[in-house]
Image (cartoon, rainbow, N blue to C red; front, side):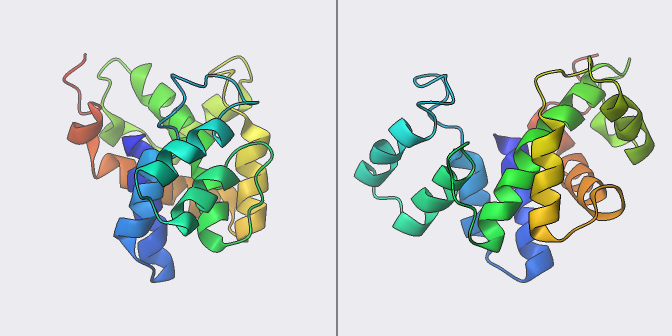
Amino acid sequence: MLSVEFAMRAYAEHYGEDPDSWGLVGLLHDFDWEIHPSLEQHPIDGAPILRERGLAEEDVRTILSHGPLGERLTTRDKALYAVDELTGLITAVALVRPTKDIREVKVKSIRKKWRDKSFAAGVDREDIEQGCAALGVELWDFHVPLVLKAMQDHAAELGLDGRMA
């Protein structure tokens, strides 16, 4: 979830929006996955918990938007949908490197693994493509580099700085 937070902060900065607000929805978007580990329940059943804790309704709505039934109306909604699956793929690419250091990962490496459907098979590449299309950004020339850099800038916080090698 930290990787999604960092990617959302990068998108907020790109669009001139509030990085704290965008980062918060990135951080919290999957908070309920362990208690509602199915697409039928997540994130819908988690929304009442967020509301009880006082999260702003616009933040709850953005978190709901990344689910399969979610309506992606705002740029923030679309960004969350676009970055969610991609951060998982980038993490997987970093972890198969001998050094396990995300700072050594290149867009070219991600693209190569993208084509291998058996690699990180749980990552829905179509969701990423749809998210980019909705945002109006190019996948390989903009989206992947932006998300990768956001994660590389926080390699230590993500535990992807080579310490796990």
